[in-house]
Amino acid sequence: MEITFLAISAIKIFVFTFVITLPMIAYSTYAERRVSAILQDRVGPNRVGIPLTLFGGKKDWKFFGLLQPLADGLKGLLKEDFTPAHVRKNYYWIAPALTAVPAFVTVCVIPFGSEITIFGETVKLVIADIGIGPLFIFAIASLSVYGITIAGWASNSKYPFLGGVRACAQMISYEIALGLSIVPVLMVFGMLNLSDIVNEQAINGWLIFPAWGEGLTNPDTGNFNLGRWLLVIPLLISFFIFTVSIFAETNRMPFDLPECETELVGGYHTEYSSMKFALFFMGEYAAMIVGSALIVTVFFGGWSLGFGLDAKWLMDEAGNWKAYAGLVHLGAFLTKVVAFIVFFVWVRWTVPRFRYDQLMKLGWVVFFELALVNIFLTAGIMWWLAR
Amino acid sequence: MHSLAFYLFSAIAVAGAVCLVTFRSPVTSAMSMVVSFLGLAALFVGLNAFFVGVIQVLVYAGAIMVLFIFIIMLLDLNSEERSKTCPALLVASLLIPALFMCQLLGVLQSTENESPKALPLTTAAAHFELDGKETKISQSLKGGDLPDVHLLGEKLFTRYNFPLQVVGVLLLVATIGVVSLSKKGSDRTAKPADQ
Image (tube, rainbow over all chains, first blue to last red; front, side, top):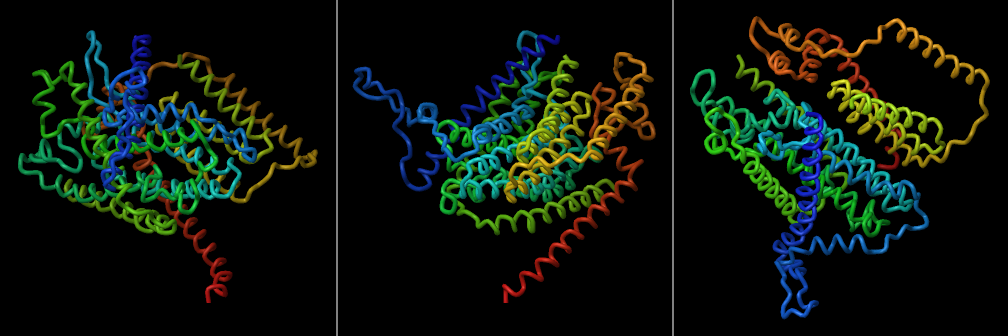
């Protein structure tokens, strides 16, 4: 038992981080460049494929430039890793790892699918099925601020330092809005286990779109469930605050003040080169992917197909998942996550950058209060419904 | 397996604490404190107290220590210089831990060393039923899980509700106090420059 558990966990860790998340990071950079090219009426990287002409072929295979991320990764590894003389060496070296590692660790509580059955063994498609999923993600993600701050400080020069200080202040501020905005969600679900949250949504309707299950028929009266639809109002506010805060937490475009090139050269990673520089970007994209996954899991039903299709197509008569249900769910989940990544990219190339004081004002004066009011609004509606 | 993890994370926590007091650079000290907190959090998780462990990381390692480091970097504190040791301080710093160790040893000797038993979850579930009806806590207890977040919340908001509210008000007062104090000072200095 113990051995099989360890073996299955090891396989899950390998598959979810190295086979799914890592290529997703690579192809997010590709998507970023291609989508931005579409938005700006350019072509984008469309050349890197298999260079058959090198081996005497007539024509290269281009594959729409799909091998570009591989070439970029190779470039990152082969470029000179230059350490400036004025940096604080130990911290300069550890900072990129401190940024990248927390983002990867948070992958472990994301439910990628329901469960698959192989050789009679039922495997849940989540690495660690713990009862405090969202809190765990917030806790670990809050550690990634060290990497950026330390990078800015260890570089020992002006612009990186300013970038590091900005990142530190920004991430602490938006963590508050992030944490408070998810409270109404937890009040509605009454639990913190992400797998159970998704299961609940598969049966009773996605959190902000409950168009089947309990969302249509009230379990107590059998009538149309107007109260559940009333709850969608505060939950939409939650969704809005949560999504915008994820943008700020991951230092994505409208809020990428820590690395804003018009003011700070490159921000905290100005003094970094080659793979260390790439690690910062991997950390940022990994955080973006985990953020998208968290939004999908909490608000859009995670791996569930929705519309009652999970029960209809993927369950047997006894109410158990069919053997291949997990794979279908994995596909559904990844589709939703990719949609959100494209949304993140789209916003980056559409919305201009905020000013730093506007960013702070938005976090502390607008979102903090709005999230607090939203909690009371949710509590009021729930109390009124429970009467 | 469990004891291996326990020794590993206790070693990390202790090593972090030792580094905290031995290193002279303030940033290194602060970072070792973070490491120590992470070790502690892992120990809490090992005790099935997931919520306490995660809050330890979220609040101490993720927020308070970040502020510490922020301040240290902004003030650009250099390495602490070796000051002369005062004999009275030295005696006190040896005496107090020694007393604490004595008490710890006394407690450890008076308790019997028995291997931990599994918690009787199903019998405990009966305590959390409300008027014979099943609650979320009793359901998950019957299912063999320990719903530590629900249990903690239940205790906090029923039995310890009053202290909780008082602490909340205290924190609010402290926050308002800090804001008003800092506002007052900045007004006096900022006004001539503005006008």
